[in-house]
Length: 265
Image 1 (spheres, helix red, strand yellow):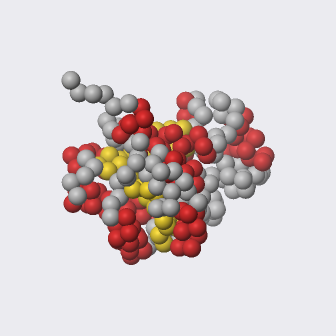
Image 2 (spheres, one colour):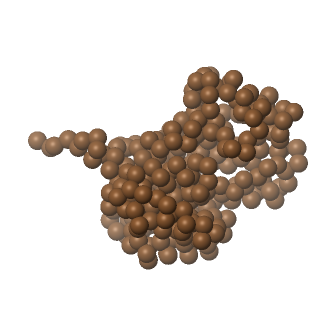
């Protein structure tokens, strides 16, 4: 009779290496801290190496002191390739990828240029290229891997125009196109890579406004939320560890929405 794994064993990431792109951001910080707390050695990326290394040094967990940073610009394929090569040279392996980095665009549908729109979609290209590098690495090592794409509730539903009217720009159209693409790319890669033991899932946060978000806009969003409040970054920690770990070993191609019920309307 096979012994069933305990909850602690299923969520344990000890001995695994995880890359979190954009780890110094509003939500990326919570992802990196969660994976470190679950036992993983965490590699954080930033376009500024010094800042990535500094943040990595602040992470705790069982692998405290072993976390490190790499310089990575996901809009540049050569930077992605170089960073991945450096990571393998320093860590020797990669088991988990959290595709979180995002170069924002503060332009709405009224004024966005074609070039700006294409640049925003370049974030998705970066997600794909990194994911493929991990898939190829996992196959070469005959080892499985878990990829978590960062989507958004706005990759599933349209925005709430009244939340922005008279306060700030409308939710950018390229952002919605990007996040919808993230959700669909997740499904596509999941079915192609399942036989390789590489799971691909999407984590889609709902309203998790950062400190700089206009208070009046946040209040309008709060009134729209079924739970009547905004999300806190710590409320994504359990979800990201679930998708990264063996706790979700039979889950692939899925989009996990953590949105306070927003998309249930």
